[in-house]
Image 1 (cartoon, rainbow, N blue to C red):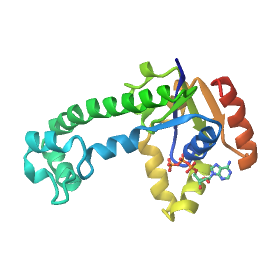
Image 2 (image 1 turned 60 degrees about the vertical axis):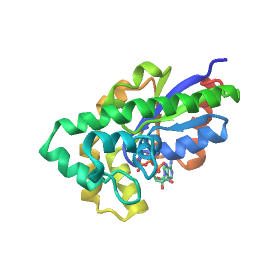
Image 3 (image 1 turned 90 degrees about the vertical axis):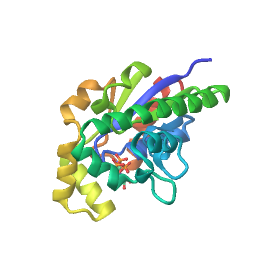
Length: 201
Ligand code: ATP
């Protein structure tokens, strides 16, 4: 049994979560790479023992999670430590993703959507995907949506946009683009339905 493996990405506020919810309604199985990654370093996460062994128990909070502030400080002083941490986390994330994929396939999933905010930035995902779906909109729309949702200042949202992969690079990596600009949610859903159809849903 095979299923279409779709990578979903887009800039902040582009509408990724909205599109993912719609795809889920249409029968896609979502795999949230970010949540899986965060879970490995949360309290009791799969990476905690290895982090304590590599960096010392002082990098683990009393609740049993990675002490992110301490690790961030350490990474400033010792740039290699970021890579060392990734070497611990990445294989665990890969294994958990594979486990979730196996569960989805065993349940007869026709389409698995990997929600990967840093798909373009990290580059290591492409080979595992059949197609890359990018949700796109104008930067001013991103700013308007995120300020409305979060109360962040427009400048703060612009800074986040500037730190993400450039829009042109994301579009260049896309096999399919959903242009979430000037669409009502009902119109967006129509677009998503058409795309979902091409994924076998
Ligand atoms: P983030 O990167 O911050 O997680 P995102 O790309 O997942 O954002 P969403 O959370 O899906 O974006 O959308 C941002 C906000 O914009 C949400 O409040 C969502 O309801 C709204 N939104 C997205 N698309 C539309 C649309 N076509 N019409 C109206 N509202 C929309």
